[in-house]
Length: 299
Image (cartoon, rainbow, N blue to C red; front, side, top):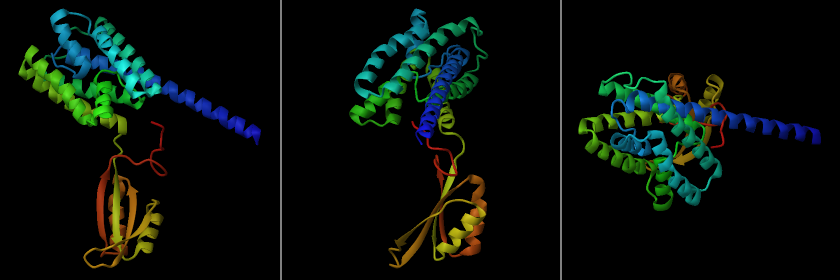
């Protein structure tokens, strides 16, 4: 028994090291992709990337100081605030690492990439900059880190003042975009907003995945028969509870299950066959974790 426990502990340590190596590899790849988006699309197109990177772009325009170095300098006080008020050493260490790598790659990449980017078209720069930058940010987020900047500031505003993260990002990025409009033009700023929106959507897709599932709430008078058919034909778990119809005052049976998008048609066919009078509500689920879906991971 002791030997088996020893082997289990060794296996868990090995898995933890593998996960750690994977996370830091994701950080390096993600920061490199973000830096490429900066130099191929945002900087040549004079589109601010938002947050601290966008602020560094504005400083670069008037001083010529290296953007990566400005990002790192701006992050130093935010690192202290994050350590002082947010805690979470693992998150903070990974964020510091990501920020150092990102800043270094941003300053090194111009040696290998075309100085004028790939296109002078504003829309193409906004679209591809948003997509590629979002992919990079999503990879870094998957590794439970950020590149610092307004990510730390947004979490501070959320923790200390109760301002939701979405609003915090809107305030910080909005201020940078406004300054960019004054520095470049309103046209540049409008395209930058498009890039920021696309980048946010892509980042969320990379972080949470595209496997959006569906949940079904079924009100039926034949709960056992409907549940048995779902278990048999779809091999999906079903949860049952009882409720009371407030109009009739009668007890009703409610079933709950989560299925893939492709299983919605078969699910409706099963319900129609077993109980055509059932009431069904089907909704989209952002993420399903656990048996039959993605495993629950430590965030």
